[in-house]
Length: 369
Image (tube, rainbow, N blue to C red; front, top):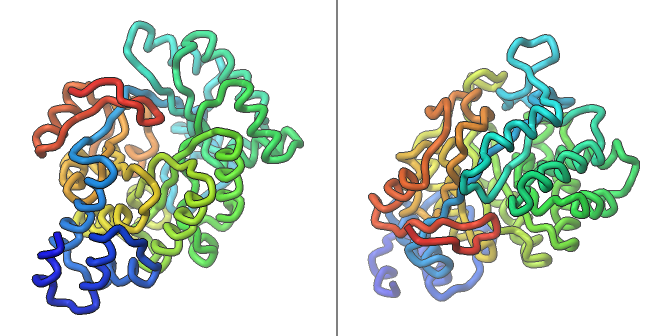
C-alpha cells in the first residue's frame, strides 16, 4: 500500500493517505479534504484498506423483519414521506394484538431479529411499549428486539415521567435488547432548524445513546445525507459519533441514509447520484476508525448500489426484511416491497467477490454461506 503514495498527484492528499495506511486517526479537516479533493478510485482503495482491517472480505447480513407501530407522528419533518395525519387514508396505528399477529406470522422461520420503529406517538409511554416487548418475548424468547429510535425513546420516557436513564433501564428489564440508529439526521443545529425544527436536539440524541451504552444496551447510528447539508456538516456529524464511540464503545454500525425525494416538502432538491453515495460510504469507513461496521441499507440504497458499496468500505447490507417496512418505499425507493431470502442476499454478495456471512444483531457469526 505504501507504493500507492507515489501515484497520488495531489500533494495535500499524500499525508492523509499515509496516515490511513499507517493506522493513524484523521482530523476533521483531513476528512473534509477527502470529501473535497479525493477522486473516487483513490477513495475506493483507501476505504478498502480500512475495511479489510476490520472485516477482511466478509459482508454480513441477518434474518430479520420490521414492525412499524404507526406512521402518525408528533413531528412533521420536511424530509419525511412517512408521516401521515389521522385523517389520511394511508395512516395506520397498530394495536398490540395487531403487532403480535405480525410476530406470529413468522412462526417456524429462522428469524433472529425484530426491528421496531415508527412515528413518535403523542401519548403512549414506555410501559405501553414495554408490555409489547414482554409479550413478544413470550412468543419468541430467543428473538433479539432492536427497537425505538432515540426520538421515540425521548417521548415515551417523558410520557412516563422518569429520567432517560431510568426509562432505558425499565425498557431493558421489559426485554429491550438494543436500539437502532434512526432520528440522528444531521447533528448540525443550523441544518436541523431547517429540515426538522420540531425534533429533539442532537445533544439529546447523543445523550440517549450514551446512556443506553452505559446500561449495556448497544446501538447503531445513522446520518441523513444528500439534502441541504454540506461536507463539513457530515464530518461534524461523524466526529461527534466518533467521540462518543471513544467514550462508550457501544455503536455496532454506522448507516448512511440517503435522502429520498418522493412525497415530501423537500422534493425540489432531487437526489444525489451514485458517485456521491459511494464517496460518502468511503469517507465514513475511513473517518470512523472505531466503529466496526458500515452498513449499506439495501432497501434505501438499492441492490446494485449496495453491491458497489462493498468496494467502498461497507461490510453489511442489513437483512431479509420480509416486506415489512414502508419507510423508504413511501419515499420512492425502487424496492416497493423490500424482501430477500438469505440465498438471494448471499448471491448478491458473492457476485462481487466477497464472502456472505449470516450474523445476529450484535455481529456474532451464525454461519457462512
